[in-house]
Amino acid sequence: MSNSKDSVQRTVIVALLLCIVCSVVVASSVVLLKPIQQKNKALNLKTNILAAAGLLPQNASASLIEEEFGKITPKLVDLDTGEYVTADAVGKSDVIAYDQKKAAKDPKFSEKLDRDIDIASVKRREKYAKVYLVEKSGEVDRIILPVHGYGLWSTLYGFLALEGDANTIVGLGFYQHSETPGLGGEVDNPNWKALWPGKKVYDFDSGDQPVIKLVKGNVDRSKPDAAYNVDGLSGATLTSNGVTNLLRFWMGENGFQKYLDNIRKGA
Image (tube, rainbow, N blue to C red; front, top):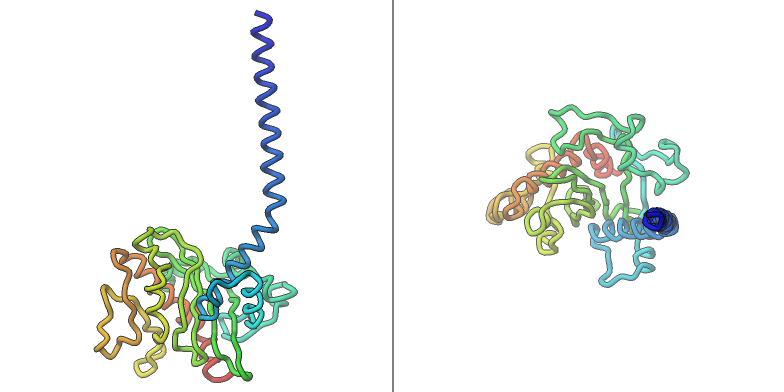
């Protein structure tokens, strides 16, 4: 009987020691690997920004990605005025340190959206947005804008790149989403992303609101509005609607419209 009790006690002690050792190993790994994870996360973001702008070299190494991203200028925009602000406005020492996703959840730096204007289901809109500029000979050549909005299962986060005319699309890509693989997940398909360059966000002959949209099926290229339409995602109507809604929200008056107006005016 005594031997049986000793065996149980020893089993419990061994189990506790094993749990403690495993906890220490896991906790240490989290702490030690965090800098590497943050570095990889930052590199992935830069990769997606370059890809949206059509500036990502094939088979680019980490050092080449850093080199190419170094040619891009990040800036902060006040979405209410469309004007640039300094990093001081968000309490940061530099623009890169500003976390826009985090700011969108902070009542100090964001505002709750009324349901009737929240077509992208973002719920809160940050006051300041981080944009990226590619400049050539002192002129804006490309503008890379963060966009996000709800699809079918999740919020899609990505970047839309425009030419210096602040209207012609260079590229669109998403770096985070949980849409259905093979359906809504086709937002990652290179063939679908290749449909975007050259499309227009606004038709200034009909007004100043964004008209870009995904259509069901294929775009009829013989129609006058073909320049503002992109093929929808087959079998993924809700994701397609989500992409249309997020683009129209962020290119609209509650998003970057004032900023893009200023770009076109040369302000």
